[in-house]
Length: 239
Ligand SMILES: Nc1ncnc2c1ncn2[C@@H]1O[C@H](COP(=O)(O)OP(=O)(O)OP(=O)(O)O)[C@@H](O)[C@H]1O
Ligand SMILES: [Mg+2]
Image (tube, rainbow, N blue to C red; front, top):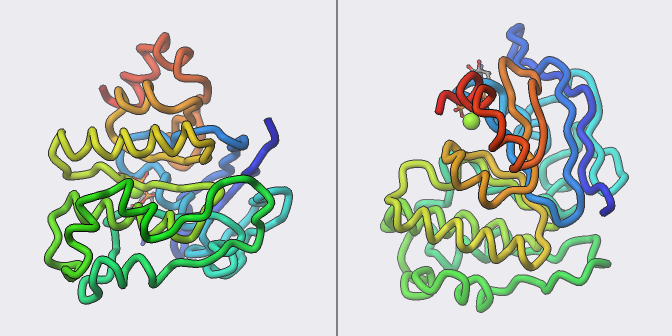
């Protein structure tokens, strides 16, 4: 498996407050990797650095062998990183369809065989979005908004999909629907970084995990290795 993303010794700060203290991890092509940890441990901060939303103070980020740290966000999206951000952040006064079209783009790097995402294909994954296509963002339920956030990221034709708390605050049935969609995408070979509080679901679905504490990675390993580490799960994840 080739390596898609390599993050090395990443450091970042909010003003004088340092949030990341040398984080390293990698994602191989086709892998689903998680960033785990309690609240405030630095997971969203890593995502902000990946997408050019927070300056990288030290360290490096390479995507498909190309250094991307401190690139502007739009260049990063064009290279094939798709973000489903914390809090969904859909456009409330645009319709479902306008939200989807707003970010649609053909990636620069199309050498892999992933089918291009179209409105029809997003609607076939999320029939509810098709029914709601003319409704404005603010009129949607939380689950529908989350589906829209995922659909919108897929419309950028990502090679790596990054989901920050995509099941947060959703009813169990909707959550299950989201996990099903992400599993289907995994089976199609789409690489993913997933941040989520549902460790049980992640243990079933993801390949490898990075456990964070206070801006550092304190453990990493496969799902089967993490399942065997009850003390890690208890100490760093509190479950
Ligand atoms: N905009 C900001 N300004 C200042 N400090 C911030 C900001 N965003 C996050 N922090 C701080 O950076 C640290 C890491 O936060 P981060 O948002 O990365 O955590 P997280 O692991 O995503 O957790 P969660 O999403 O569960 O809160 C925390 O101490 C947090 O208080
Ligand atoms: Mg977060």
